[in-house]
Amino acid sequence: MNKSLDELFVYPKELVDEESKRVIHLVQQWANKEIISKRQEYRENYEKLFIETRKSLNLTIGLERLTLPEENGGFGWNNPANAPGIVSVLTEIGRADAAIGVVSAIKFIIFAVVSMVPHLDKALCDTLAPIYCADELKTPSLILPGTGEIGQETPLFLGRSIRATVEPDGEGYAVHGKNLRPLNSGAVADLFCVVCADKLGRPCVALVPGDDRNIVRGKTFLETGLNVCANADVSFNSVKIPKSYLIAREGVVEEIYTWLNLLIGGISVGAGMNFFEIVTEWSETRTIKGGYMMKENPLCASVLADVADEVFTARLLLYNLAHIMSKPDDWGYSGSQRVYTFSQIIGSQIQQKVMRAINRGLELMGSAGYSKEWHVEKHWRDIKTIQSYLCGVGAEAPVKMDTARFFFDCKEI
Image (cartoon, rainbow, N blue to C red; front, top):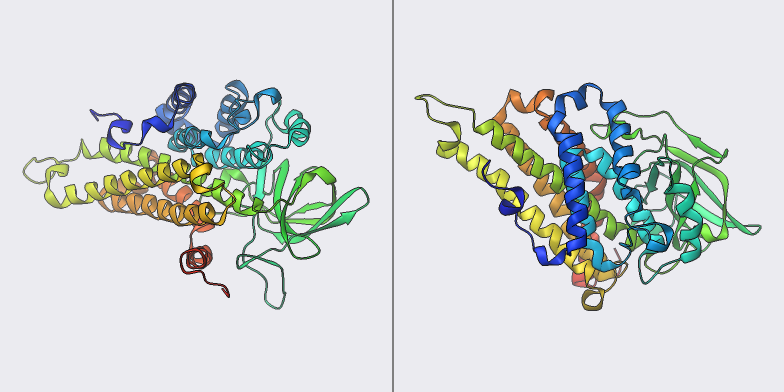
């Protein structure tokens, strides 16, 4: 490939300042050196190297402190203006390994909710940073509203069932919830960020330390992708949390979804860009009848063009969302209905476009695409799992209802 990815998949570089570009370059070097340059070794010893590469990224480079304020030992990227830089970092991680990207994104989101201007909670940052962003690798997990259970009425967040509840208990709160499905890492999480409903049915967010004895974790289940994240259903049996660990400000749940769509979108775009690298390398070595290179055949070239088209437009959409989030004075803050709705629309489109890109490339690559040696099938499995959480069959209708509420002022859906 005679052009760099940034030359091919262009983005508005003026959104990312020079300091951010240095961090992005450092993460790009990590991705190329630690994972991309030794794919086969990484796949053959995946669980062990997954932990080692997470440590080098989060502890050696210190990236787990990305969205922490500087006074808490962080990078100081806790301003909405940093959204383009943060998503650029996640894109580079996604090029290497979507599973590491998901766990990293969830930690960034949790601390963004606590530290992001204008909602900086200094006291809570002072409490959480030494525990979850110190010298030991910690795994966060996110539990969002979702589908309900037959015969059970629950409070709702924009049509989604909130199955966790929280109530006052002494000087703090107690969190309840049975067989909740985390987005990631339920079997091993050190900290849960849980969307709950209070006694009046209002949505709020509880931060629940994972070492409480009243947390019951189910059996780790097998997923299409992201298996190394070790997910499992979780139950909270009156788990006590301090008063400061409950965040009930207006728009906090919308804020989580907005950041989730941006950062998980970055991971998927990064995986799509690496898939482009792989299919480009593959197409350079394939010939057809008559000795012609396969990519020079018009039909094959059309398929390759579809791959580039989908990844290209997905990245443009990604930075459009990052730009919107970085300009709260123009568009509103990330917890506003406007920005939340934009993130839902754009996040859904990004996941679908990356998935279509990989599916089209697999059609052309055939058995090479499905073999583990080429790493394409892992990208497919990981992105398919991400897509199923964010915009799959179970989530597509709520996203469309979000869109209808905002654009057509629907009141009853």
